Length: 434
Ligand code: GLC
Image (tube, rainbow, N blue to C red; front, side):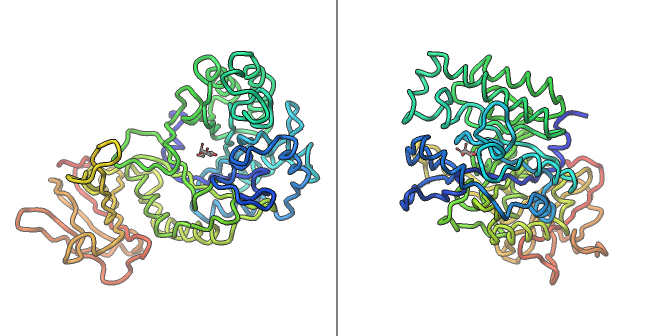
């Protein structure tokens, strides 16, 4: 079976952005620094000499790897990816390549990556790490810091960027692939100046040390799956495997002022929407500097978990929609700033599939037909059963046929789920014939 088979089955993962930026929480010297929390050093043009003092404050008393792993399990997530080193350059693991890490440079003296890897293993979760291979605002040769050091173009020419890759980035990726057991995936990000041989050296590292470990789509060379842009869910089915990294609010790293949380209903819709287009949903939490995942995040994720407990068969191991018209349509009048027609998404229902079965998840009854019934695109196969997935008795539901031969499901009178009701349509012939 291919390296990526588990990824295509599991669909749903937990992303964790945690670092020194989590202590700052979006504010520096009492001033609000706008933008994603994990970018505060760059957005605030904070000198290394001042920013690195945060390491002495890193002492997250509330950090509990088992609690984080349990939250992922409760949420129906199957893999966990944590920022082992983000653009700020601070590593959450013991490293001989740089003392700027949670073991050597903090009063905490603990290896976060090691503790979380062990907790995930105990909880039956696959474990992966995010590693910013090019950007490193703590190092003279790292990409991205042009307020303490020269511009990136200079670093690419004068050999300091390549020296950074050889002395910190590659050695730390080697440490991650050597010291923490089997990694499910390496999540590289912002491939600045990573063309050609620079990226390929990381591919060699991963393939040599852990052939089973997946490479994401942001290394700078094709990996094992495509990474969509942040929070960017495609309008239509995309050939897989691919993954959308997504935030619960508007920042990856903790911001004390960003409480713009997505509702459980929005999260379930996004998950089903992504799977119905053939992808994975990697949903992020940003723990505080103390190691606390905000309660609202936990509550929302557990609500998604309860939905998956009842309806997971429509998600895990499910394939994309055979239809497509349910996603929406291009506007005939509205144009975006490039003059392209604006896509108007339809959010009434989505369809995921397994051989001989359609899982039709209905989100808002009023959108699916004035009479409030679920109309789906015509297909020729004989329908052999229709029932609500959450109904343990699989009580047969009425399938009605319109004059022009289209069939539709009369909705449940009771037992619908406000987060989304899944109807199973079983049909003869294994393959859908339109
Ligand atoms: C973007 C952000 C980075 C974040 C990543 C997550 O690259 O710049 O901070 O880690 O998205 O997808």
